Length: 141
Image (tube, rainbow, N blue to C red; front, side, top):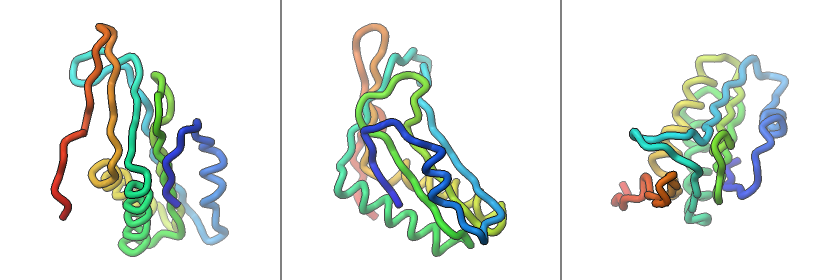
């Protein structure tokens, strides 16, 4: 399950959705909004996404993880909209029989989401200006 959400993430519910009796391991990654980037203070972030393509690509990444790693299930939710410092921006969870597969799949998913899903981040700075991060166009593979 991949989703883009304009609501705060319910991490406990997401974690419960990945429970399997066969699972001996669970690994998660949660990305938070921090107060700085590249030497500048940051006040808040605004995420925008191309929803239809984003969900499709996110689902593809989760399917790839299930094929590449010996995992039982995986999920990822990325926030869109305005987020404040400390808010959860992205969550990835993986359940597996063993920890090595859970850790590896979790890392794969977040790395691929950051590289491939069309989500753009606008940082707001205390000086009153803002800047887009990761908004450059890339030719599809």
